[in-house]
Amino acid sequence: MCRILSVSRSGFYRWLKGRAGRRSQANAQLMQQILRIFEDSHRTYGSPRMTIALRRQGICCNKKRVARLMRLSGWVSKIRRRFRCTTHSAHRRCLADNLAQEVMVKAPDQIWRSDITYLWTREGWLYLAVFLDAFSRRVVGWAMSHRLTDRLVIDAFSQALTNRCPGAGLIAHSDRGSQYCSQSFKDLLRQFGFRQSMSAAGHCYDNALVESFFGTLKTELVYHETYQNRDEARRSVFKYIEMFYNRVRIHSAIGGFSPEQFERLQGVA
Image 1 (cartoon, one colour):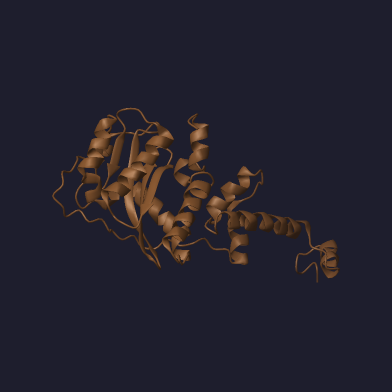
Image 2 (spheres, one colour):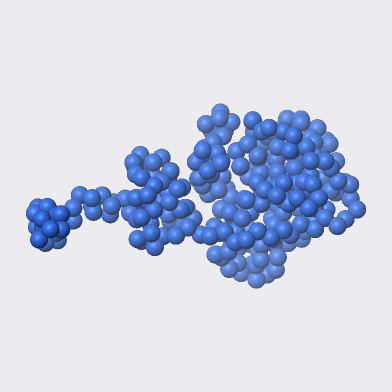
């Protein structure tokens, strides 16, 4: 029977006595490591990111093996929903040219990209504005409010200024939303010698970097939560951005590092 099934005698008797082989034991140990990382990532990592995370911990493994073990265990990463454009730019405020498309980003704090998204709670809408560094993909400043006003963008930008202290010449890029066209925000940029840039009309993907972040935030967190009130949503988003996304979450566009790790490797942090 062993000869016909291409199984060794020792392997057969080991199986008969209920002892797992070395390969099975190794897979069981690997699955424990995968489960721990999977839970730490809020159940968001698929096999490519999981393989990177395992190798960073000194665990040598093949992506196909990781994918097979995750599939057998039913561990599936969260799936992104279809993108919808929600920007309302039908206003008469002064616009700005698209300067960001002319710049090759080679260092931090050259271009900050920004946008606003909506989060639903049982208490009502909560609005989130972020400024994201185009070099490291790090969220350098963010703010939340129950009102969609000019102040929301100014608060997010002010936090970014406190965190980073960029030099003159920084480009602040956004879509054509009215909050970014406000005179108070333009005055703030002018005060520090920064330049304003905006996406072309009807080209929401000009700001795809921030749209991608919002998609990640909602896929990995918001769509799986039911916020009873705005304070609960604020705490949840704070934890995701400051404790997971910036510090831990692997980003394929920056070599499989988190934004904080990438900046440290570049001698920034």
